[in-house]
Length: 246
Length: 393
Image (cartoon, rainbow over all chains, first blue to last red; front, side, top):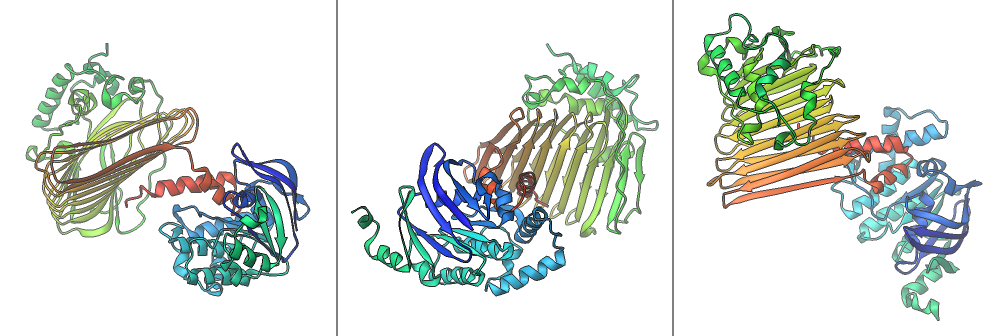
């Protein structure tokens, strides 16, 4: 599904990713851990198409296409979803309108018929119920006045509605209390499927107590320096990152 | 050196000096007109060194124009919608007249009801206000009685003028104590100079919605004076776009205590439009509140001037003031001047003001794009979101 090959990328003027390799197959869950400033968020932003994050060399192939040639909205319509570390507030635009616009834009790109209001309402009501979230989320302006936990839950809800093929969660667990963490993790687990892959960027092993990863990678100084199974995350939790340099 | 404002009488068309009022206008009004004509001779036409005109292309005031086709008039859409068209020909009802509403041509009102309008900021620069009286053509005296307590009822005034010369309209609004009403004003004219006086009675709750989406060559110069009595509550929403020149001044004065004035403006300029939006709130009584929110968006080579000023007089304690001016530039050649001002002479006052000018937030645009929304539509959503912040009613 995704092949990142020897990627070197800048965020602004600074080189952050320095020869990163990663392959993700359909249905796999990859956790990416690493110290602050290692390039974890830059990786997510590069894949989603954030301005000012630019590829210097290397390539990213997604479902047989050169991902980095696509506009951010085209990547989304192709099935790439980034759950933001700091979701943006959009006053005056309610979640329902926002999500329906997003969904129908993606459907238009894919040559599908738009979803009408009634169909959409039925679908989102079911999704919000399945994800164990409150339906007042739908009427509120996007992320405005949301607590940190609500914003992260809203990201997971958006993911549920848009049904991406590759979901990148950028520190979705940061700032969450235990209950919120569980709701978010349950949401992700519900969305797991054989043709949907996840890249979960996190600092802490605790999220991985709830979401079982297939692989854990350590990203340090712009490249993956170690990969393993869930045991690696437990090791990192106990020993930190210092031992990787020894 | 700028010329005398007397010359501006020619902007009103041939043979307008002292002849603009309809036949049958009372002598007291003609006397006021003559006094204004006298006053004009000692005033200068607007020029760029005047504070209220420095961010507008004043030459446009006297530019030649061809009459543009006015857009179609809205039709009343419900029983709670009263429509009155105001033009040089007088007033025309487009719906039934409710019992609680009196509207008559300004030239037929009683002398005792007339209220002079005195701009307090930069009075020597207010030649257009004096010109309005010197070349007065028409307008309305509108009275809402106390028994009107349905805030959903909309009284809509539509100002219409098709022609190459300026039309001077003068309105007077008298809103009785404890009434509740929505007054909507829509400008569809070519070149209108409008002065209005509002007396809002004790406890009255008024929504005011003003829309001026003008044709490319059209111009609108507007001065409002509003007085709020004890406990009055006014929410005013202004939506403006396009036109060669729009110059709006609002002067709000608290005549009692416990009153509230909430104002929102959305100013959108494109091509080469000039829009000025000046609000002057005078807190000269205790315990009143004003909130002024402007959201402006300028594109192409257009320009916008925002000025929210609040003066808190000695002794006007417990005044509360908020000024929030935010602006977005959508092109490199567009200009926005934004100026919040507080002048406070009282001790116990809560006041906050702020102003920002910038481009659309890239992070927010990316957020929308990352959900599949094309950049053009993402920009539209961001602009809509930005405008919503100023929607006060």
